[in-house]
Image (cartoon, rainbow over all chains, first blue to last red; front, side, top):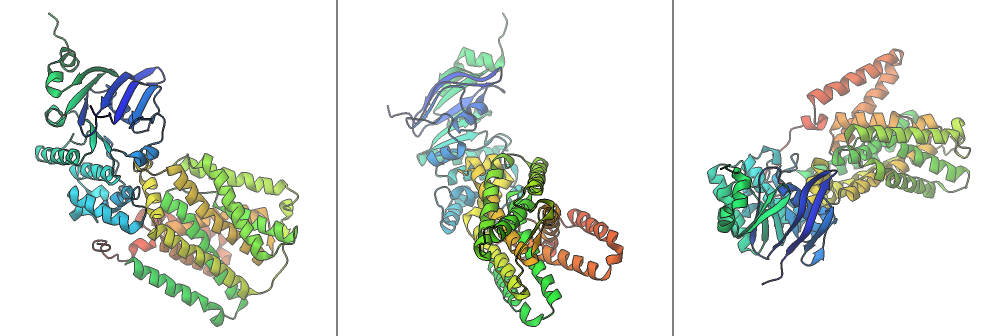
Length: 241
Length: 310
């Protein structure tokens, strides 16, 4: 067993009286794709925000490569190798696609010329190079989601959090994005992905964690999790006999 | 394209160097000096307004702090002008550092209100203090050399302009600042510390403004809280920036020249219709906001960005 890259130990996040994430523990191993699923409001995005530094955990520990990162700022965590995308994509709309990626590239390439060179590589990889000089706001949803991934990649992360990068895309675009994600895994990036589309999550995840009402209700390979009675109940409701 | 614009700026700068050789009339040279001053104040205002997205209605406070620091050091401590004006810039920068932490957390109108209130507070404090002369203001030793002040003002404004050009258009700093302007939360995920960047921008805006205030104090030889700490500096700079083109360096220069020329001509020929001035100015601003969102600069034909840096 290789050392896990991310360890959550009883992570809890309260907002006032509301417990959005409740005593969640799991581990992510290097170079795997871990899927995080659950019904709406299960606490997936909150958990993402805790891991990426947007929220400090109320209780519990988040260990990244063995170090406690609970309460560290998002920009410090980006420096340590955690990249993330946002469910509601956050392009810099007034800037060009290229400029968007250059800004992310500054993290590892502080010199402007080197950052730009690096940004072009990312744009080639995400197939956005032909739109480099367009403003980011002119991209289609699929394009903006790809830009979101591109920006996270420009940080040269070892660990990538993808928040619903497929939702809202048409089937061709979905396949395209799946290919992209699998390529990233092959490059050695560990991925934690939140996704609603089951077809996608079942296909690309090595393992799954299921949240419901802020609690972990299942964990394991996709095939097993899909048959778990608790998971079926959470998704479909209980049939009263 | 950018390099050509920079070349244009260098040419324009070279032309302004020759102004005192051509203009011998003292009054006219004063007009040119003031025009250069407003260019400086508009450009410094735009660092925060255009690049960082914060409308600073306390810009006058930096100007006033610089003016008063310079005056106090020259009159009460016997300093020479140059170190006193530099200290004025430093004091304004320090003010930005202190004021930035609480105010830069605010957004939009709230930031504008907070900075406006802060500037009013500073004005009241200056009115009450003995060292500043209170409402009577301060008189500085007179140096009757219009050329000297023209060149000093031009020196400060152009060093500021070209330093900004390098920092905001060439170095990564400008793009990072724009990222924070566009989406602060998104910028954080990319390794940017928004608080740090905004404070840096605030200081970058404040220091030259303070120095310009110091030069102004020595130039006009008399300052009081109304002339240096009133709303005029902030309001006029805002108008120039909006009219010229926000978020660029050339826009505020164009705006400052046009608005200041209009103001000067108006006062020279139509001063009987004083009330019209503000009405016209207001109409121009309202019109430019509605019809020219990118200012006068936005009207100029722009070559396609494509291929620009490929």
